[in-house]
Length: 266
Image (cartoon, rainbow, N blue to C red; front, side, top):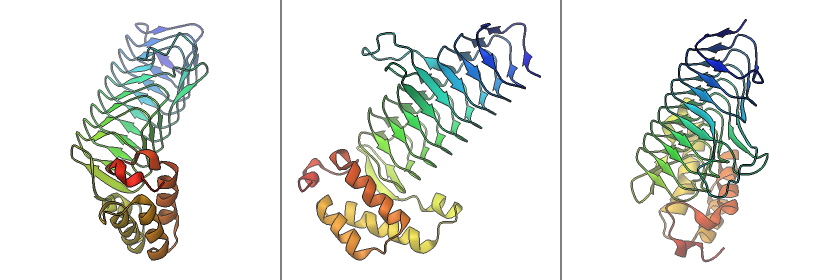
């Protein structure tokens, strides 16, 4: 049975699942769907186009499905789609898509901390941690198991791979391949995300091979074309090695922390 405060506003056309808790002064707009066992805290605002899965907790003053902050949006109907088991903390703002029937996507089991902003059409994977006051622009992709520390900034259309750690305050202005740690301003390669990978029971030899891949890419001074040839020659095939190669070949036009001159062979 759902528990809805008589001080909350819930539009009669909103669809609520079972055992939903909506606290005082929350605002639930029309064209909203909220799944089972969600908790909407006081003063949270869920606007038209929100599609929220099960077991999510949305805290005070968060705004879900805010209209896009983009001049290209002309009032089209669009969505924010949130999966299951997420915590979305205070004053988070998630914009819906600028495209008709388009979606901003949040996966499952992620923790989005206070004052974060997620722009239109971005996609956040599963098991992500987004730190306090992180700013994510439009059309960004964040891979699974990635961590963005507090006050990180991610520019439009950047793709951050799986198992990435972005250090606090870092400005991401390009694509970040999987398993890497990025830090400093201007952004630079800091190492392999070995601590988190070990927590996930990745074997030491795989982590060593990831480090070998990134020595070729970031620390030899050669072009990406030659770095990939060396990786194929020097590193044993594995899911992790192949994920790095595929990511770089798919995103070679703007790899973070690589000078533009290094792309000349692609």
